[in-house]
Length: 249
Image (cartoon, rainbow, N blue to C red; front, side, top):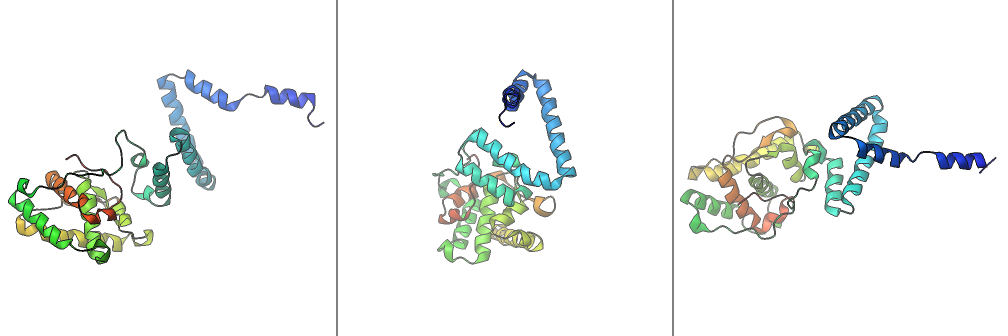
């Protein structure tokens, strides 16, 4: 019989699973909690191997719900998460999209360069860059835009470097182009920029390390990277750059 006393009694006595899990979580010691988390991660990995279709359907939603429960309505994080699911997961660790204690927004006011404070080589390089990146950025050809974006991204990364996959993605190249063509585009831009610095006895870039999308490109000198970052962030073409942190100046 529907809605019988026995059914009502069973429904009332059925344990509250969410309450049970929360209570068990709070009662665990740090060591027990660490083991519990590890076993949960092992269980998810097993599920991804044994039932990949199921895992593929529930994992993104689980991550999204977890982020919502943790951060509430956070449009910037939501956008980063969606981009990560679509493509950025290939070169960006999940931890990188999470909010840090300091703001992940690009500073609005970046101290402009004072030519009087630069040595002769750095001053000459900045003048060469100004000559290269003059005019309306929206009318630049593709190679010039690529060079500016790559220069800016690598400079703002300081001594940490940037993954090749991220560089290619930031140039607006699709996933299908992220192989040889994307790598050649990055290489050509770096060669052109290096030629600008060579007459002044400066080496812009350190040798790249790694392969494929995980190949790391970085500046050879953190001081020079900081100088160029300040130049880039005070250039009207800085709008072409993805949102990124500014190195310590």
